[in-house]
Image 1 (cartoon, rainbow over the protein chains, first blue to last red):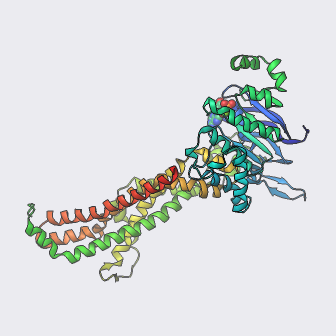
Image 2: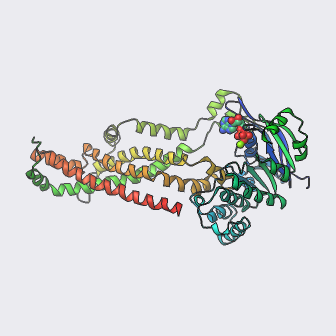
Image 3: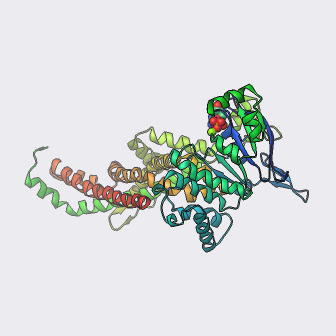
Length: 257
Length: 261
Ligand SMILES: Nc1ncnc2c1ncn2[C@@H]1O[C@H](COP(=O)(O)OP(=O)(O)O)[C@@H](O)[C@H]1O
Ligand SMILES: [Mg+2]
């Protein structure tokens, strides 16, 4: 595990409803290369908001998100030649894969087309090369025979595995998971967690919001506990689960473990 | 006026078969051109309503690009003239009767312009036909705009988020993800709008367009019978509208089958 900072989150705030709801309240945290950072906390504590802010699906009210040395919450930055340049959020998003609770596959496209759309349209990859790559990835998750199926024909677990490899098609530097197993029937949770575990073992940087404490303990190298928009406690899984400091974390763990 | 329906009445009506045929052609042309104008206008209006060009946006932001606290400035920064114009247009059209709109456009707008008076296809008077088409197009543009917009908004937000998270731009997302799904969802509403346009075009006889209804009026003027020509008109409108909705329903079924294959 290196200590290269991939994403730096500085004093991030996200307020809703005329500033009455503090979904994120001054969160500062770094995501290092190779981290498997697991974010836990009660419902409504701001886990999704934090994750979604990282690739600007939510626009922060205040604070900085520094990715590749650029504060992507700003409109422009000063490039290496000292010139002012616009922040191109599409460019940064390509490097951050995202997996959603409800899969969000494109229902009008086949599995294969779901996967090749963005590499072809955004990266300018040839269709043939994209197809080959997609089939290779599908094979890895045991779904090569479903390439021409439509999402509606797949089980939840299969959909989520497709969603993961669809994101991998873009060769992201970090993968963001927002409760990837929460919408699944219990018997399908394992197959998705296994794919994520493999990904982690290959060294992919991951930020995972989940209620699967087993995964956090086994796969995570850092655990963040959030409560009421604040980052209350963080540490190695062992510290967090075996020696929780903050009363809110103790209370939370007593409920979920 | 005799309100009994007689075979003789139908015979008299069919003395005007030529006029009725011409009326049918006019009605079909009116509806087709209205659909085209309405669609182009509807797309334009929908785009206008969904644009996010706010010239005063800077008023609501601090130098570093964060939202200001001052509510009045934030309110001003939300001013979006293009969207506002389209919204006003749509709401005015939807809240006034189509007959008033047609009269206003015929007398008010085209009353000020000298249209060349010629006929095309041998029997269609340009100076009556054009205002009719324009008025109907302006009317259905507002409705089609709302149909398109609701179709686009009915697509789950997660689709946009997934697409954007893959690095696709707003325009790419619209084109490859949102529109294909939205259009499929709104086909029934569009089909319904087609049928409404065919039926509503009958109002154009009030400004002297010689459509099916105008042929009915001619028969009435000549023979003082009303029921028979009206029944013929009803049959003709039915023959136009019913197959139209059935054909579109057929395509709709075919398209939704594609999904579940
Ligand atoms: N679009 C929104 N508008 C208003 N409040 C929101 C919105 N999104 C999230 N919130 C609020 O922000 C808080 C944090 O939400 P979220 O990040 O989704 O929590 P979590 O993912 O931990 O369950 C919650 O109180 C939620 O109600
Ligand atoms: Mg959440």
